[in-house]
Image 1: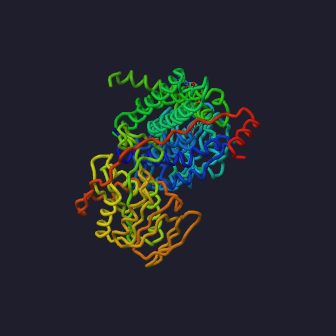
Image 2: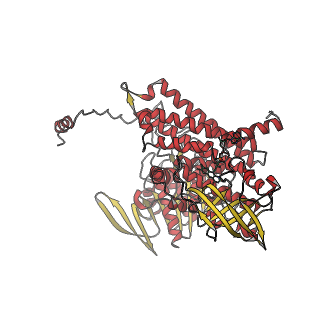
Image 3: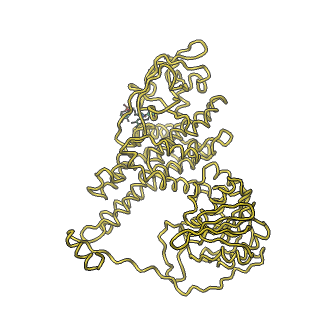
Length: 380
Length: 252
Ligand SMILES: Cc1cc2nc3c(=O)[nH]c(=O)nc-3n(C[C@H](O)[C@H](O)[C@H](O)COP(=O)(O)OP(=O)(O)OC[C@H]3O[C@@H](n4cnc5c(N)ncnc54)[C@H](O)[C@@H]3O)c2cc1C
């Protein structure tokens, strides 16, 4: 087994936490669309945010494989909880790789959930095609003036600090974008209302508008003009995280379906005795395991410092599709009950769908896989 | 004051236990194993004593197969300072009996001179409920069993015990052996930074021979059987029928 003693120990801890603290209130969080601040505080104390942040910067310093294990287990409890962990991991990876010492000093507060963050790329006219962003930052004395708007930003209704991709040179395409660390309590920042979503409803998502927001010069992250590349460079890890999250949703559905099939009786027998139901369960189990192995393999590539782009896209795409298809199977095993609010699988099916959309749609993942294949060849 | 906490690696309480085909015991091969839940409570209590400043060091010890070091790492990740593994068997199916465990622990107590030994009241695998008591007898120390509360005050400790129908408070002289019950505390989750730190904490390896103890079993298991399966219930078609059934059963 490639998981070492520490991996297993972390996985067990995350699993116990998800079972003990997260899963029991997932249904209520979904119903109320509530931001579970108290759970996030507890997670912060347990070091579940910023899993990969090195010890000298205030994190626990684990590898990407550990991060994937944590994401799967948290998501098995409730995907919105894992999604917050994924968001913090993305932001902290940006800071660890590209931040100045002063910017990295934000890490303890971010990992401690005292500062809530947002990662802002998407705009009304720029979704998949990031080069279409219209948010601009213009030099003003020693600082910058930010104007524009972002949509569907996770944490927007509650965040304190946003990492915003903005255009700093309109003539330079992908090389004309930069990332700014923006204080969301500053003058000129406006928040849109919280969106009501199909699934992962405890995740707070909304719009952010910036009108003449002053950003100090030292809040430019990394080099001017490198913003797009920096955002994309952390997406490998981001995709592994979302893929693991998808596996967790699938796993929760499988566990629920196996338990239900063993207890629900029709024709005087448990429905698990019918081959038609058994095949559903078997297909769920094998696809979840295949997705999990893709996730782990992609994570290990990142940890080994290998080119992981194709592996991460394959994991994200496969796991996202798997989660949607196999939670649909879980609903099927439950019959009519699976369609009713209050049954876990009904929520899981809704929670799964976004896995094919955010962190790059699955069409885009396929484009990346194909591009890598055609550029680097099909040999493994 | 140093606190010694013995921890046992047992079949996880969530696992559905299977009896081995030959009836010689429970199948432990490829089964999830965890720290005995009562021992986890003892570790938690020891760490709390340290956080309060009553204890200066928490030493976890496990006696058994090599894999028990995973159990010790868990104790270290929760907050124990160091660990001792007494390698007493290669075979996961060999249970080290309470007397042998108590004798080894007595040997460790002589070397380590703790002021308190905190054990689980029993291990959930064999439910012997004997090791703590035997250890106290071997050492000639005071013992307090089934503790739900522990207050150490200098040379004395006040222990609240869970007894049939209520609680009993007793005072014991230190050093003492205290065995803990379920309601003493709720063990913490090991945090990720502490799991990382635990990897660097010392884990010393010993053998029963180091303490002059022979772990050869003295008890022979005659037979192990599955508990009788519960009979299926009957479905009542109406409230009236249910009431009739309850009357028939003499319940109402
Ligand atoms: C719940 C939620 C949370 C989100 N959180 C964040 C966040 O925190 N930060 C953030 O920046 N964004 C966030 N997003 C936005 C998300 O990343 C985008 O929705 C996603 O990138 C897709 O963009 P779009 O919605 O504009 O779709 P479009 O880009 O308009 O795509 C529509 C469809 O066309 C397809 N398509 C587009 N181009 C091509 C092509 N070249 N070839 C084939 N098919 C194509 C897409 O795959 C898709 O199926 C979030 C979205 C949601 C719903």
